[in-house]
Length: 323
Image (cartoon, rainbow, N blue to C red; front, side, top):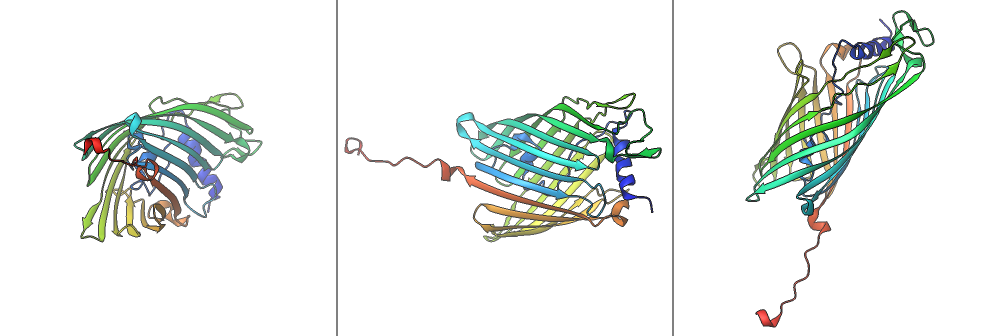
């Protein structure tokens, strides 16, 4: 069997090739719980301060596998007619690592306090590092890569990030559309004789989610996401059932079409204390990589502090003059 390090890093090199436009878009099976991580128009939708951290360990036991950590937060600010949010992410894939920062704002207009229409924007930067000492090529390894576009030294690059989104929410349904990497800037890595300039392309995502009450105690939460770079399409379809706000259990199916079925992910969400949620998902690989990995682990910690806990209503003292 080929060395797994060689396989994974070769895939990375193919993605970076100048003739290919690839997406730089971290995967998450928990998209239905925090759509604002991708779409800034959902900032402030929770009517409070929303903080969270997500950890995803993809394709466990496969050397050089992707590892992603994301810290996110947003807040509803009635004074600004919307919400603000931020995100900090770290991703590692073989010899390639990225650290990203972004800030954003969403303007919200409510109609009869039942329908919420919002437009949002995120801006930030992505810092990339390519460690040439970890690269493997068909012609060499480490100090002797024998490739004019690669260096055996550590190379760094920085590029701007910009995404825009729109969403509409009601009591029973929420839907959003977001386009990421609007600027479509390139990284620049100095090789031994040439400069490698990988281009990542923009990504469009459509998201639809809902929560349907079944009596006073039970609910069903279906979700759907379609992600595309206008060359390939990826679908996520999820269904979860919950008991009050204490527990929710279900699954997410990713990449199902006539040609393939990427993964099936059981998902568990529990709330041990009020306003704190712990979400765990395990992606069972069903594609060709299933023979060389042990699936993907993902966990999210999420805390929401409602606005009514922050902005207390002023005490009213009746004046006899107006009684």
